[in-house]
Image (cartoon, rainbow, N blue to C red; front, side, top):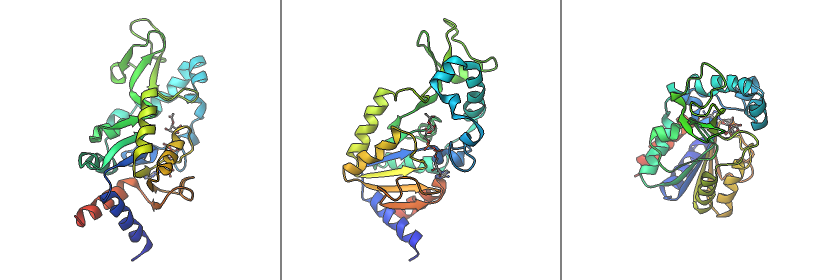
Length: 251
Ligand code: OAD
């Protein structure tokens, strides 16, 4: 059997035999929904300076920061839909295989696909938070024509409720993610460059618990040669349905 099929079959067997899977996703899983990743080919950070997402820059230059944020995250996010990779993961959760899905993505696509136990490590772009009075608003209800958007109640600055560089991780998501990663027997790492801390430490919690690690990516990451047991190179939206077919074929 060719190497690719051997690996796919091994991965399918591990997934079939586990009901304690923790999934860890990054921007790559949403690429086939039309959302550009941050790094690598077509990455946002080739076009924008990451300082637009630094909390210090946002607080001093909210208009400039918001202009880029609106283009990147709000002009088209409500038009995108989950792709086959998100859907397969939601199916595996309802089949009782997945105990937790940690995502660094803020696009809400896992929840839209039907995943329930989703731990949003970097928050979510669906809400805007007033930095003065702490009220939060659905982003679709806020007019983003005039920037920066201000709180209708107290005129404080509204900030997307996702994590900027220099901010802490939401405590509940942090705790749930560590627990999910530490207690799984199989971790699926999908579409992340593994370059952003502290999120990139999570797979190491799984490894320490002796979990097997399957990684899906279009190119090798820092995990591939260190903690990954089975590396599947390709697009998540193609490989996850292929794995699903293999699992169902042998049931
Ligand atoms: P990156 O943009 O750093 O990495 C995306 C990864 O997905 C790369 O390793 C690609 O090779 C891979 N990839 C691209 N298309 C793919 C596909 N169709 N199928 C599978 N893999 C694919 O994204 P993250 O690792 O998620 O933080 O970035 C981490 C954090 O950096 C983000 O959450 C964001 C950013 O700054 C915040 O916004 C706080």
